[in-house]
Length: 176
Image (cartoon, rainbow, N blue to C red; front, side, top):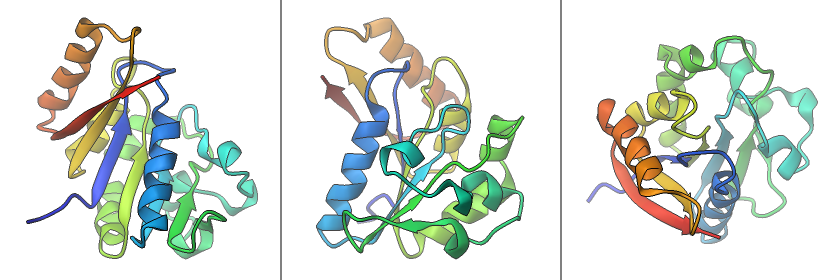
């Protein structure tokens, strides 16, 4: 009855393809007619700007969270679909976890979800807490694992991280 509007895409460890999955999910939703915004919420090792050849002079998520910009100033249209907006990470802050767990981030996600399905490309769960922090303010998370590489223990640890913040697991995507 209430489909998710804010979705975190994460993985247990780096290299599982979560950014590719997040980009493809956002593109598929947009091409299908759903207004979508893909947000690079990896404020440690962002990849969205490079993947989509975005203009870095626009700024991004970190600029929004500190109040230096408005969404319309920093979001860029995607060549994939007129229904897809892209929001890069912006400048890398000294305190990513605190920024992602801030009241400003929660307010931003609520505002974006009024008009868009929000896909958050986040850092992996096991090395840092950022994805778990994001999941606490999202409708759910998709966990990307690598076939033949991700262990049961790693997936279990990732699921435990989400459970600790009362995050909802929407599914597990087996990649590669």
